[in-house]
Image (cartoon, rainbow, N blue to C red; front, side):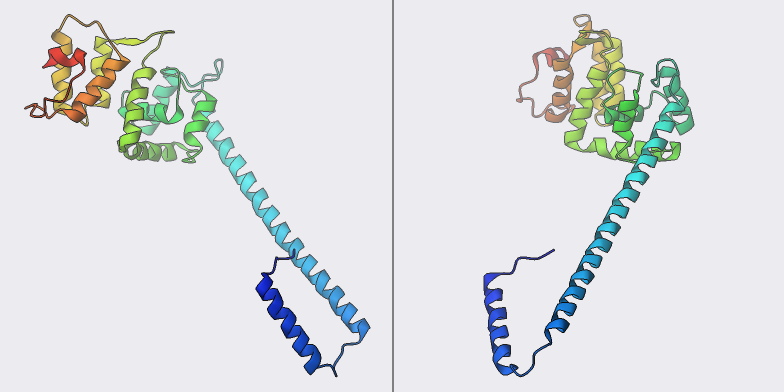
Length: 254
């Protein structure tokens, strides 16, 4: 493979060749020797290039095979918990998985795992979702999956990720077609699970209100997001920065 030579460098090389041609005109290689040398050099360069390309191809091939084997192990881990008839990991399979990972199936990290997979149906994991969530962390064993749960806690704590996780948690609980709201009892459990560790006082306050009030039977997405904004914007419990406009549905809480 020939490299492009900068014009100034080319002029310098030509000048050097011209000077050498005057100073060393008395010495010339026999034509046959020059052709032979050129031929050998070409063969050497060709051989070197072939070796380089061969090494690259071997590396790519080895990497591809390793990746394929790894994905095969990830798939095998999925099928060890999947229901044979449905081809999915169902609620029973998830409980078995949780038992093997030594975590409760109601642990928020299981919800985080569903978020990582972008699982669409509550209590079920498809093979595609499983691959989506576990390919990047390369989790092909239960022990590696346990480490993924620990890493997910850190990942979700990032502000941008937490908002996405918080939004996903609500949508994940919409189990019926065209469902847009969630009953109060489920919302109280979800608030405690998702927001409780971060805003314990506010969550306890809001849950207590939801349980005794009679105006609301369900909570929609706007209300769900409104409570998150309330936790982030309002000083609690003194409400010292109460000049910040509150979502209308939170008015009764105060």
